[in-house]
Length: 368
Image (cartoon, rainbow, N blue to C red; front, side, top):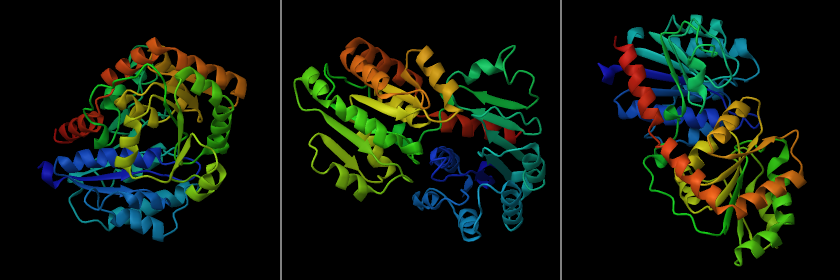
């Protein structure tokens, strides 16, 4: 029975990786929970995983990992800890499904964990080839093309492969949102670079945007507000507050609850964002976005989004300079047609029901 299923999601999060993995696993966990499953989240060393509401998940594994000092860089030790923790959990192995979402995945992970679970699969946005798995999920736009002849997944002998933007793993805050009504001018600009503020990009983007702030206000003929959302594992709020307290036009937000982030995005006219899962959240609200590639695995996703007219890419962080960034920002601000068109396309792509689709498919596959 579905109500007897135990779903284990093994993920990771830290100041370098940010919290994207934990967030999307939390969204998938919620979808399984809604279908009557008992859900466990193993989030390694990151304490932020504990911020999910108590009604959402059960945390015996996450707590044990944290108390045990599981270090992300020690792959062998991490696997051993998961195996040990799984051995302590009651329940029929035939009713257990394990979802892995870690960069250090290997066939050994899957083979070892198959001793304790009926099905083991993984979330993939880094082109892992693990034929020993029972399923894979790649929720990036463009990933569906990898299933076609000549694609990366074509000859990968995994029973179930779910790929494409329809599987975007977003929290319930982003489900079935109303159509975005864009104004003719850009009055609210959001800047966010994910949970870890990699390589200080929050500071750079804010500084470069502030340098052309007079132009943004002149184009709007009204006051413009720059909204800076500090990452869950980035600089402390009071540091940003001290740096910007005398600058009118800049609003800094502390570490916000998930529902508060969703509500804030709703008000934005334009966003500058890292090219990870946050882009999907902005897409759900129809917020025109300039996407910056901060990690290697973000590049194909951002490129596919730009190819479809969903975002404009700022390219990789190693090549981006202030002149090009400011040119792109001013161009997006002026281009009302692009902002309106991209907003409509984004909301047609993302309806927030990706986790529901993934959970339904995996449970149906597990019951065969």
